Length: 297
Image (cartoon, rainbow, N blue to C red; front, side):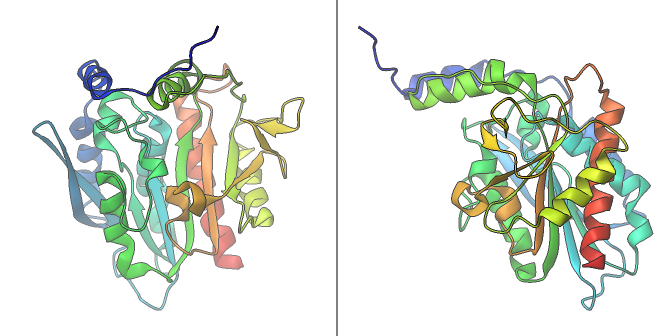
């Protein structure tokens, strides 16, 4: 007779946290690059996350000469700390492309929302919670609450929000099994798509916008095909390389504003056809295409 799995007890969470190991440095990988951009952008600390005596400052970068008459575009990365190109792609965009939009939009970029998880290459924060399921009214994690406070003065003014993510093999080998164990559920194996895809908002799909972003990315890397069910990660493909989630119902980062144009990128870094450089470039191409479309619409 099968036994129903049990959700994690407090001791399980303690054991999980104790086993998390630092693999890289937020200060070296992210903060040094932000510091180098201070002469080109307005940099502000919008909060910090604190776990076990460690404090991580959170930074956002804005266009110089912010003009309230211009539309606001929001770029977020590193909501899931282990999704490296989300962070590095946001920083690459700032270094390589952002200034070309001066005078046309107000840019707001939060490149690494979950620094504790970035250092430990984790999806969850130190409380074994997924920040990208916690963008509730006031935020149910430190990471989401800080970003919600940052965006509060801009509610109703954001025209476009692109949230930069990856889908990795470790989703299937580590994080989905861990989630099932944490929640007392049976893990049902799935498949990881080979290629780039987008997740739009089920309540506001904007498929022309999604298609324009994918068309730009396709010049950099391949778009993920649907599986034999016509799905990507269990969701119906509604356009090539596009699936939809209910952003608000799932409390996703990309649903935190009422922007007309919203999308979540998903890069596949484990593809034999990809490199870190390609993944970062795909994120930059997606950001630029998203801004360009939003400005023309």
